[in-house]
Length: 391
Ligand SMILES: Cc1cc2nc3c(=O)[nH]c(=O)nc-3n(C[C@H](O)[C@H](O)[C@H](O)COP(=O)(O)OP(=O)(O)OC[C@H]3O[C@@H](n4cnc5c(N)ncnc54)[C@H](O)[C@@H]3O)c2cc1C
Image (tube, rainbow, N blue to C red):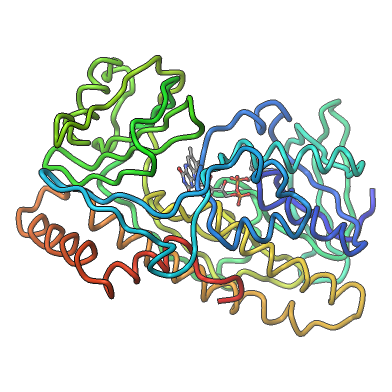
């Protein structure tokens, strides 16, 4: 097989990159290790930044967001006895959208199918070769058991944190940073209308809790739990009770609605960056290059921002033989990556219990400041609603 851009991974980064490249007439083939059904059903992120929505709209992928997405002006931040609303639109003129990653993924699949773009699912033993040459290639075993070779001009690793692309960069040519947090999130999806109009981020002595949503009838909620927590130890009743307490049930008449839990999982939290995001003819995008804890709602948005930068760089490289943007990709992308790494770490550190009493007082002081000072609130709002693409 031969294409111009071999893309490893059919998550949001991989499928969006293929879509953006096709708009400029550049061919690609996406190679994905999971089945189409598995990728479509994965429950992950749910918040789109302002610039992600603008990019998806400009790429012709905004119709369902406009029809079914829910635009939010801001978020609530709370601690026992107090709940404050931060209005991002008033503060920085930018909103966010509640629109699930599963929906983004479905829109991208539909666009790929309508255009007849090639996505190879259930590829095993995916390996990247000759990345320093101008003729790199990817090998894999397809679903029928046949060995395949995909030749390309460029390979893009969009294969998340467990794919082979990141480690295809020789150790001597990469630098990595990692922080593992001493807690995880127990996340649930429930068939119950949200008990709030916008997301609630709650600091509580028992641990952080968050109330998010996917639609008018489906709620998404999270609890801070110790690392190594087994979901089997958390009955539905125990989960609802902990959520009610931490989210401030009975506070000023507010109550948490409960309903049937349809999904329950534990998500470890870590920060990770590998740089540079380019090695020869290999480019990394999305979770393949960086991971953030989900508190700042940045993972999916960063993946979108990376490919928004990479697509025009590859078009320029392959169509005009101009390497300027491709050469600048890693440095430019990393500026936003580190900003989002910092914001995600900061939100996480401000809201989760570390077990240290001094930390808790600092967190409360920080929360009082961001909810009472316009300067403090605007800093949070600007980062949460997202800096413009290209920052
Ligand atoms: C369980 C979970 C929950 C999350 N929740 C949130 C959240 O609430 N909020 C938030 O902002 N972010 C969240 N994230 C992060 C967010 O989902 C990611 O940042 C986002 O999916 C990044 O997109 P991506 O395309 O870079 O990577 P992925 O979506 O991870 O896509 C990578 C693709 O590569 C494929 N792949 C892996 N190995 C290979 C291989 N060997 N060969 C070929 N393909 C391969 C994978 O199957 C996958 O389809 C969550 C992530 C996880 C894992």
